View 1: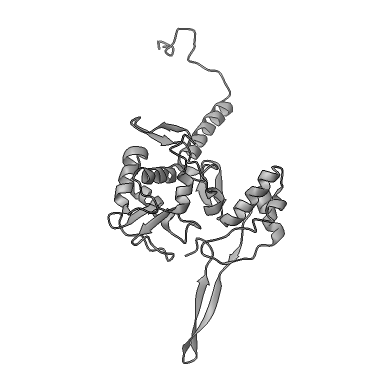
View 2: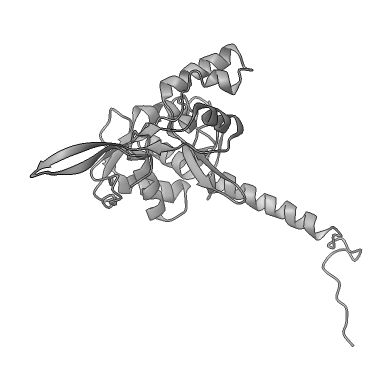
Length: 277
């Protein structure tokens, strides 16, 4: 005869929880989703950064790679990031650094890259041992005040050091540079905008915290893509997109006809939709 062995506990069934399966699954799935969101997938609205980008900025600050200093090898930066703050692969961290330096990917690059950092055609950047980097003025604005108790710090993954929970962000990075990410059950795709227009909208909000989307969009005309292009989306559609957070922005390339002689010509694209190769 099979002997029934109760689960560990005090003998009163304290380890057995009677609850509907749907509730147990939904609660645990939500916890997993939130850990994914906060851990790597979606940017923090306060500084517009995912953890890997924030750690790159902080590591470069610790290395004193300010805009007016000499650049250092990207391999040094990546090594500090994965050794102290971000225990992941060096390839993924370097790719994140490269993107922060590409003027066709960032409206306001946060990394001043020296060397081959790829191009809009999709060619890869040179290896990290060849390229060098330092912070830009925009990145410095994100970090200003970090040594003055402007933000909270938390222990790093191994408990040997500390890292900022969020950057002070004296620059509207989330909307200025935009961001995208896919998490568990949700995603985001925010286009870049003109920083001067964003500041004007912020001034309106300071005067009237209840200002609606239509009033703010009198100052923020719409996305401002680093690769140019012409927005062909109707104004009403854009207003609905900004008001609801759902929708899209259609962009058209600009081109010129260039005569090549003997009755032939070629089409030269001068501005191209964002993230199109």
